Length: 175
Image (cartoon, rainbow, N blue to C red; front, side, top):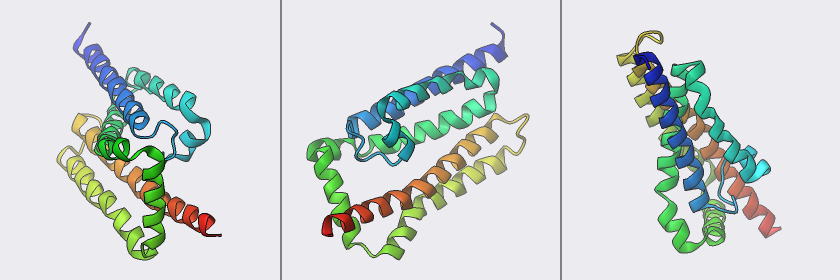
């Protein structure tokens, strides 16, 4: 195996680990997917989530894309994992109910701004890494930065969307 093939294999293995981390941490935190932010996963459930493991083959097609997916998946798994202890202690349903109650009490505009703040800081980090490794073709660090930036976009989308979903649920409960 030459160095290029070895790199493809390494990134594919790390991407597989990152996807398993994302799916495993999601399962530990939300086996009923009540807390899942991704509406596609909530709709198509666990079979679709497990199917996403197959992205581990992407580095054999394009190493840079594999790195982007790996970084984003690792960051999602890290974020999920940071909440597991609390969700498991409370229970998925009780944690969801707490989030719904808190979203109902929160002021919408500041809460949406606060939910975008992590994305802002992540995007600054991703853009900084891309600045330090500016060549998409010769710097693999560029793809690490792009993965961080991709995660920032995910957070920018799902943070406010999840807050609004919890708020809507609270309005439905009150009606």
